[in-house]
Image (cartoon, rainbow, N blue to C red; front, side):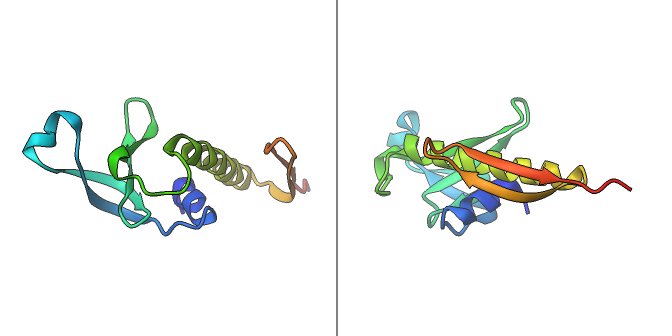
Length: 120
């Protein structure tokens, strides 16, 4: 499972892979909605993530005018970025033959992991 999908799941959202969402952009507002093909959507299609192959990252696709979550978009992205990094590290650790044995969330909201690997 991709780290982005895992991160969204951990945050309590139900992501859907390979989807399209409708977005109104400022320059296209008079023309109506744009269909934006995205790799992952969540929150009933309120947000989408499109893979940016040049920057090698996901771009957030969202209409700020219709954002109805209890936290601002920026705070949501901070939380998602942390979970995404965590899941990416978990995936890399596993590929390298390690296993996460302990994990702590610190008072400053940082996350510490302990990983081990048996060598024969």
